[in-house]
Image (cartoon, rainbow, N blue to C red; front, side, top):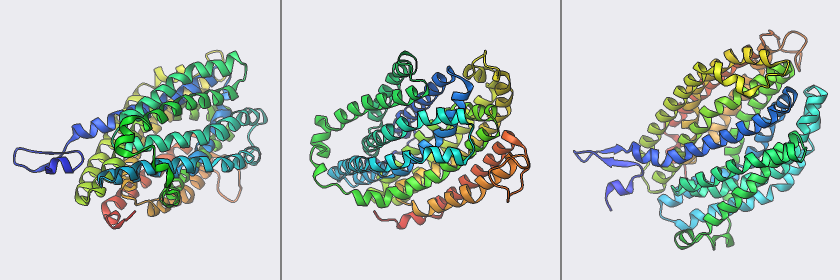
Amino acid sequence: MSAAAEYPAQRLDAGGRAQVDYRAIWRLAGPLMANSAIQAVLNLTDTWFVSRLSTTATAAMAAIYWVVLCTIVLFGGIGMATQTLAAQAQGARRYARASQAAWSGVYGALLSVPLFVAVGFLGRPLLELLAVDPETQRLALDYWWPRLVAGGPLGLVIWSLTGFFNGIGHSRLTLAVTALMALANVPFNQLFIFDLGLGIAGSAWGTVAAEVVGLGLALALFLAPRARRRHRSHLTWRRPAIWRQVALGLPMGLSITADLLGLALFQLMLVSVGTVAGATTQIVMMLTSLCYLPGIGIAMAGTTLVGQSIGAGHRDWARRVGNAIIRLAMVFMGAVGLVLGLGHRWLLPLFVNAADPHAAEVIALGAPLLWMAACYQLFDGLNLGASFCLRGAGDVRVPVLIVGFLSWGLWVPLTHVVTFAPGAGWVHFLPQLGYGAVGGWAVSVGYVVALGTSLWLRWQSGAWRRMRL
């Protein structure tokens, strides 16, 4: 077999020297980027439908959205590990083990159902502890239960199956599943929110219904004749390796959860500052998802290519292709962030009800926040690229410590210090400077600069070369 065939995303130049094949990277990353962009569309769809109800409903969604996502990600590490294990197995040509990782993720997701139910009962105490306005709290809980308890486990099963597709390099199958869910989500939102009169809870049930449709397609593709022949996908359920995936996936879930939980508290602080600050932050977050979700698609290609290279025994090539992925993520996210900042005059009015009394305030605050979020994107590209390449190598324990320290040791307390006015914060042993949403977003930019730089240094250290799964 030629060297070009052995090394993922490689081509040989005229002199026979190995070069990174960016076309091969884009063939893998393109569907993953489109998949993540569709996820952004899903989020924007939900936000748009909820914004038709009221600014208070949008703020309620902001109050609980990231807490829901954090819970799903924390328990979802076992599904995320599927991509790393499948990629390394594919690189080593151990095809049955790749589908074994998918089945292990599916069974782990089903075992997580009681955990989601237990967390469901913590929603009300959390919102009461954070002094969220009573009407906002009521609407947030209406969204919380179906989105978390029903939608959470379903999402983890889908992650396990699409992680298998991504790990073996068939990212177009993941795109097909997500595209179908996005298409189904629109009529389901209309049906549940307005036609059936469920309000904000209808948005959550619409997402659940779309997940059921997507899961049906994912299972059909996973058990299709081609996968059955090569990867024995119909047999490997007999010997699931759940604990192996827990050992790898738990740090993955904890790392992302530490970051997202910091983000959830960041948003909750701004919701506590006021309805306008909370609603504006939710809109800006959903708009910048057009940067970071496709950026995640590029980074996920890094997990696959690094994992396949390591599985095939080519660690030097893993480093080289990983560096290429990191550069691509930074360039893409920085460029899209700039476009969003320049287009704020046209974008922000799309996500407010012109008849709402707070509409003008949301648009005025949204302009500087969107520019800050745009600046955030360049270093978030560095963060995502390095993080997902480390994940492909199985280096997940040190990154979780880095993220946990920067998120909880710096970002969260500094946001509290800068955002709240004296006497208005959640705790009173910290100074309170009262710069509001603008101050909170400035702290967030500093956090992502530190995080991206730290994870890049970890990748450059080469410590991941010693990892064994």
